[in-house]
Length: 153
Image (cartoon, rainbow, N blue to C red; front, side):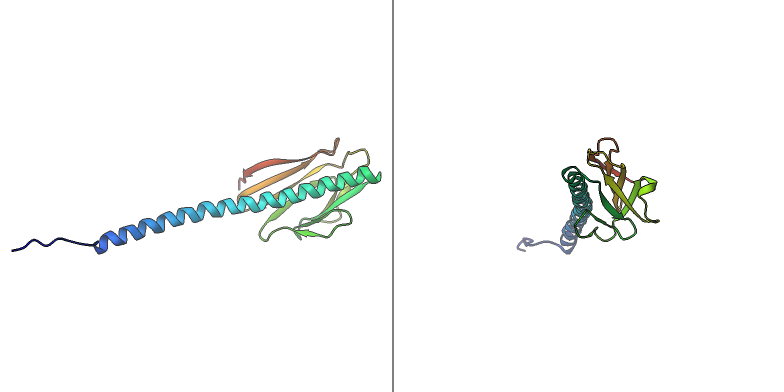
């Protein structure tokens, strides 16, 4: 009786390889998704920081107070003589500023003065578990970003 040589793969082997590929793709998708979330928050926070620094610069150059308007409920902000900039969908915004700069429940400003100082405060941009905090020093008007942290719920 001649010996038969097996060629190819069994169904079980093929299913095992497909399952491993599916698992690897799931891990890659989760990792990339988390990275994209962080990138969106980072980009939005950089844009807001630029708008705040622009506003401070305008106050110094024009020698008159300038304010950046922040609409927390509408998830948007506006620098002087600029259009409203909306944040990406599902992104939350929190504002802490001087009581005198609040126009209502969800609308406020951070004002910059000709000497570079400001009313101070901070804005937090949140998307999922990623949060970036933008701080404005009241004495110097310096705008800085605190690295992202996971939110505690």
